[in-house]
Length: 138
Image (tube, rainbow, N blue to C red):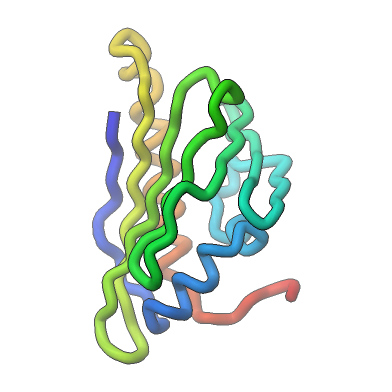
């Protein structure tokens, strides 16, 4: 199953947004409220999504300044999940972003999982669209 957000405008340069989201420590403030117990190292993070299982993600791809991809750690998730954050430059001080979640969900469970994934993707893309370049708590 694949769930994609629409492209959302972001009022910072693509390089600035890339630098921010490619650092797992910054990812927590962009995640929706249903994410709890967030922990991060340089190349991994883990968290719990309300009503779902604990997720542990590892950086799988970085393409400066257009893509950051994360994937579940093998054997640590009941369902393989990937999260891709695409960035498209839109001038010197703006860009567009899109969130994609890919989950290897059995067909019988896809109806139960689709709405929560759509909500997660929508909230994450909305938070990215509100990024101003300021790093809070740093």
